[in-house]
Length: 116
Image 1: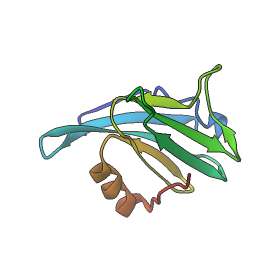
Image 2: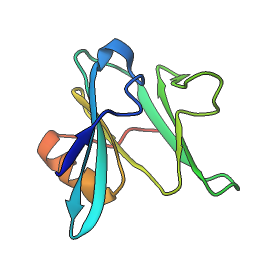
Image 3: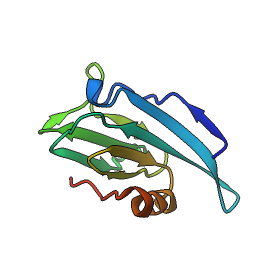
Image 4: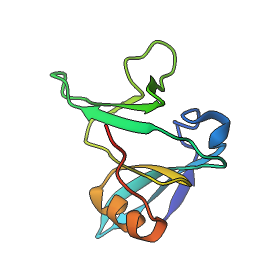
């Protein structure tokens, strides 16, 4: 890890996850990042669905109890130019730039893949 900065998704879980951060670093000389949300209370029924529409930008939607989490009138939670990888537990929610980051965090933090 070489840098930590505020998450642009700090609003995602409201007061259930008041501490968030984006952690960057290098894995085999490739820069990677993980956006981590630290839950202070249980958030149940989280789903994450991602798709690549014809515009070629990856869209993802995080929902809590069937309610999509969005800012304003956006179509989803966020978008990216490359696929994103997600994992979670009762204590953490992670969005990462690499499946290897998620794999490493899964074993150390007890994370699992959210359903869509």
